[in-house]
Image (cartoon, rainbow, N blue to C red; front, side, top):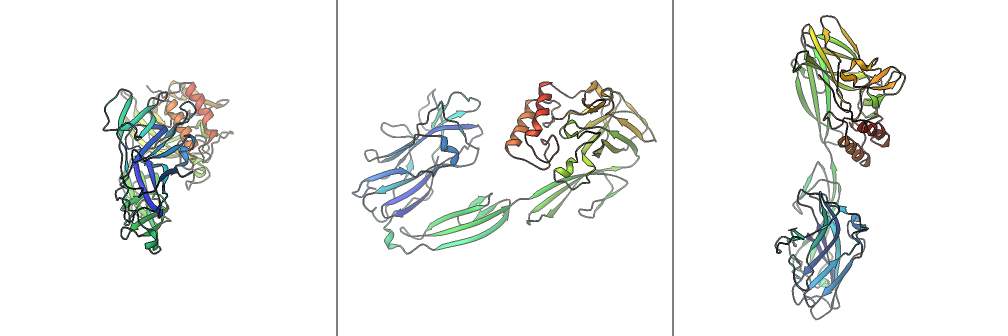
Length: 478
């Protein structure tokens, strides 16, 4: 837990925030919390202190954690706060690793003015003690989602019922209270800034990765302060990958460079918002060339009438409307353990055809088709390659695939199973969880989880995947 953002708002009132951050590696679900804030004796200056929670000031995610209570204890020189939400009806709030979340903004009021240049010396109470409220985070600690645990200060005595792991961070600069009438109006300075990826603000020394308005109050002496405001816009770098094959050499239009060897090449340009645009070229240079005319369909992209959706176009990739998606085709030796002897990257057309080029000699090879969200499929038997173009059509019979491992999308028409997003050679719950997460994230564009290729990850992508999970579909090869 952390104390932050203290500010005096009148001669007899000041406020501060309390944050919580999961700084570990374990998933935590918060259901209740308390914190005690100790202060220096004499703060009341002969008056009577009160302590209140400012309604609506905490992170909206904590709205379901109810029964908020806060009091001031003059006997213990402590401000106390707790929630008492029902453990049976409160939905746990995930504490994202590394991200502070505001638990409350608190206000301290006095019936008289605070003494000029008084420092309350606020500090979080991290140890158990009679009459004192200590800092506690009641959480479900992964993988346990049925019994909540109390996480308390690391310096407490060990107990089988508690987790010692809570760290208290107090104000880096002590708050100083003053008679505000002695201060002129604060000077407010606004700064506009635009950056790529992140921005470090000199006023705070902090690095910000999100656009927004940030404020820093700086004391000019013990009683006066000035305010700096940062209006920040963060732009993002972009990246894209292109697959190409050519005979002899290839000139990449992105940078005008001519390549004569296969490999992965990169170029860094500037995108429309002034940030880096990283372009990657996966290039295959063909020397002695064998040509394969290959036909296959992808189940999720099936549009009927021996055609598939123009997936690349739908997903925002500049491509002709006759292009469906990219595939990788490997040729394997016909002799165990069937090593890869050549690879071709090709564009699969909406009619199912793709042209592949391989630098191989005459011989017999298994054809292996890979796609970013389909189950990999091998030809049922080795295929003869020579100087003439070879044609192989997976779509007209399940027997064209090793183990008959395809799905019938229309009478007499067969296609690769869709759904192996995780690429572990199985269609299972790992893939289903990925799709559901991307649905909840409203993802769109070039996404492997967009199983029907319409450019969005939504509820239309899950039915076929669920059926394949229930059918225990997996990759088969010799």
